[in-house]
Image (cartoon, rainbow, N blue to C red; front, side):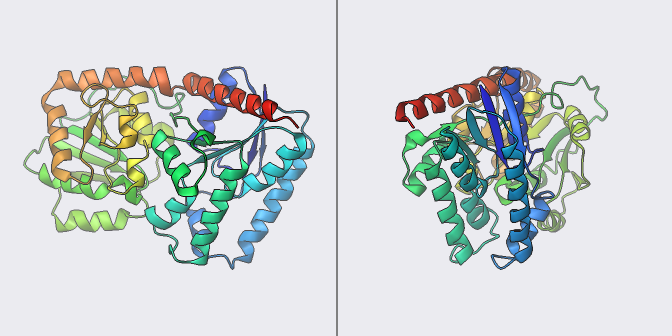
Length: 383
């Protein structure tokens, strides 16, 4: 099978890297037809905040699509076209090309762009023309695709209900982690403190507020230290919250960490934190940080949710806690600190789960099956 991986997707984003690596590990030939549109998340956010009347943005899209077309015209025969994440506009050009070639089109929606911009990050007013346009574009992109990829069954049901599309159109495929970077690393303890680590971009669904409040709850335990790595949308707000609560047991590391550096920091921690936000979206995702924790054989604490229940068993391969509850999170941290055998069991079982279901090989096999299904569906429909 020869796959045309198409669009302005972020080539460095874990979702795209793992899918491409996984397919290639299975012996599938993947040809990338790619044009870089954004220079990171901050660049994307700046352009979105300028709204629809943004000539620079539309010029960038025009140049990107001209480049994509030049690359595409040089390709030889292919079997399936996959629009990489985030390709919510790319899917329309891809549909035209796939239709002319009479080949199936698979769109990796992954997450709802409309929900992310409007409900999750609050970058776009839900009553605005921009919000309406994004809603219509996302619905049309899903409708035009033969198969739509999402990260959890909870998201598949959400997309189907939100846009009135058949549930059978959607396929769950896990996110995973880059095993060449994130894997178990023997690391002698550098400090006596029991270290709890969060790493991420401080987006609202992460619920960093509850991590800071849990740190305040554990102020009477000087041997517990929190390390918060990264910065982003709510970073300033969290620093002010910590100051109001007089939290002294958090080490803030806002500077950019290269993946290899981040892996070293995780290796020296005792526990990894996932997400704890209370939004509906937070209940439908399994964050990248959770997969990374499992890949590195670290015990994971994250919120209980429909998405988490699809794969996690609390007390066996993770510890789940109530969303938006700092006291519950503090109790989970204490439980792991006070019970080394529980930490070891969760770490070992979590890593085994990663190898069985979330490794590049496992995700590649899952993706290959989905692509084979799309070929069979297209074959049944005929020209």
